[in-house]
Image (cartoon, rainbow, N blue to C red):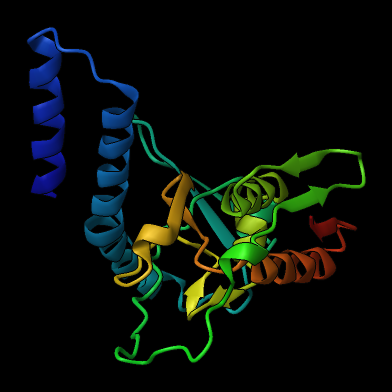
Length: 212
């Protein structure tokens, strides 16, 4: 728990010195705070709650409402999908994927002269199209809902399309969106289309996804 204390102390020192935090630093602090909570606080909470719940024989969801300096409030629901209740962040970290090194592709995924643009149209008429396919891909998944896509358990190169862990090998291709969640963009435009088509079909979204 001391790491959180050190973090808050450092932030308070900066504020006392009259230094303002820019957006990038605020984001980094928020991500570090969430990382510490995931690794140090969640395991303690889980170990405390799990023994008490073993006597319960039906599925349920517990929502803990915490405000510093106030008593903790715990709510119960019989719904078994947390995303049905609120836009919550999943605190359990995705495991790191073991990648085999030294394997070379016989053919490139895409030829330079075959580069295409991704275009996505929603049933309500909304169109997402950027000159970079990874931007269109990321914005589309964000509009659909990060947790909705995450719950489909779709992965590419072994890495979840929406993950809360930076992969050791493909981390540079994971775009941070919000709430400590990253979108995996290490794929060709064609593969991104396939992934969006699969998501659309699974969630019955009726998306029109095109390479143009």
